[in-house]
Length: 64
Image 1 (cartoon, rainbow, N blue to C red):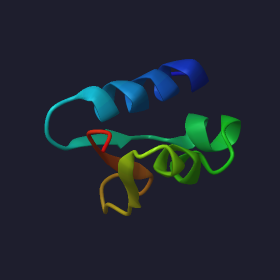
Image 2 (image 1 turned 45 degrees about the vertical axis):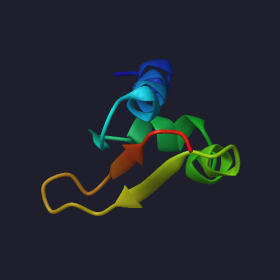
Image 3 (image 1 turned 90 degrees about the vertical axis):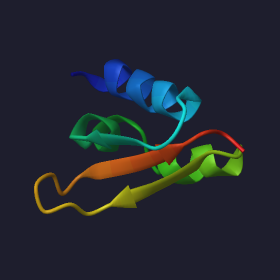
């Protein structure tokens, strides 16, 4: 997907119940500088994880 679609997936993951894992973040990395830190500043629970299958993933939880 593209940059805006990737950002929309992150927002949807933050609103979803439980834990969400999003893979293939190269669009976000290209288009948004330090997105994790910016979202964490407004209360988002997320972390970048390294996965053997998909090394560029992020895990999300609900906004605090």
